[in-house]
Image 1 (tube, one colour):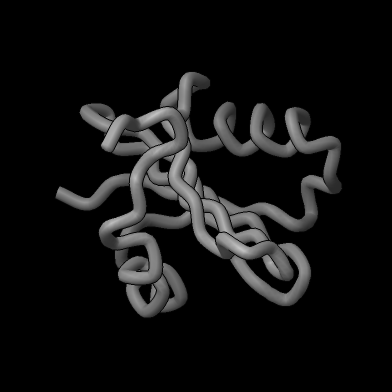
Image 2 (tube, helix red, strand yellow):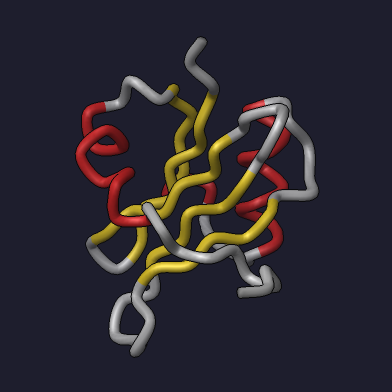
Length: 93
């Protein structure tokens, strides 16, 4: 089963909000930082539209930079492996 995602376009890159009910998470890309990729648990809504609005509001950004898709999105499929093996923020070694 594919899950809904929210795509956040910023700085010429994308970050993703994966709305997997078992393990919802933000897959973040931090352009210019020493650690470019991070994963954080998502504690907000699992409804795609509500989650998109919450994420946008939390980051005080323009809603035009966000859209809802699913895991079959070509950009997501291409970039998802960037976050493989990255420990979640707060996860112990």
